[in-house]
Length: 250
Image 1 (cartoon, one colour):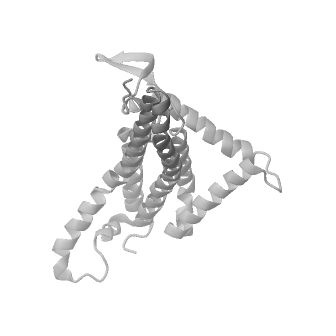
Image 2 (image 1 turned 90 degrees about the vertical axis):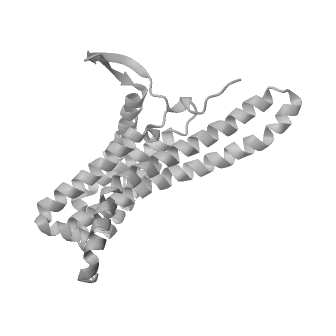
Image 3 (image 1 turned 120 degrees about the horizontal axis):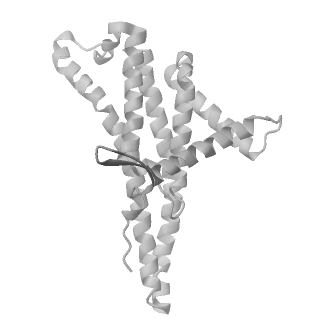
């Protein structure tokens, strides 16, 4: 039985919408899952806080803990001035978290395993930092590329390195999330394929499938942890980058 571990990442057209210049624009499975994620996040946040109880239930507790966790993360990274970006950071964190977790469901689609999606998120953060940095600080914002305490004669070498490092942020920011989701899901698919293949050999194959099954269970638990951690990493890096726009040179 042939199982393609890459098949789970293929974008499929569900509903053709319009044809522009010979290129068909369609509603895809990726777009469908994005809508589902938006609906689930909205249902959780709005549904559990519309009628807030003094003694919160499980879902309300999850929402409140997520809210406080990201608020504390942003406040610690940027100070109270950075709280104006809280709706953006919280939305980004929840969307990525739900995308990662939903992608672990068998036969589902992982939105964050698509590089174009993570690149868009990373570029959005990048341009917000640049635009807000210039809007708030003017040309003083370029002091971000001049580290404090560096001797003047080292600046011609240090400044280009700092600029290059800043320009490559979207690359590392996006590829880290994309690569972790892609690699983890492929690994899970490969070991799951071993179980199916070995089970096809009868009783002896069933015994041989025990080890791959154990590995799938362990890897699934690990991937669940990675899904949460990678959502947090993307969010905390966003907070750190926003701090550069608010407090350049600090």
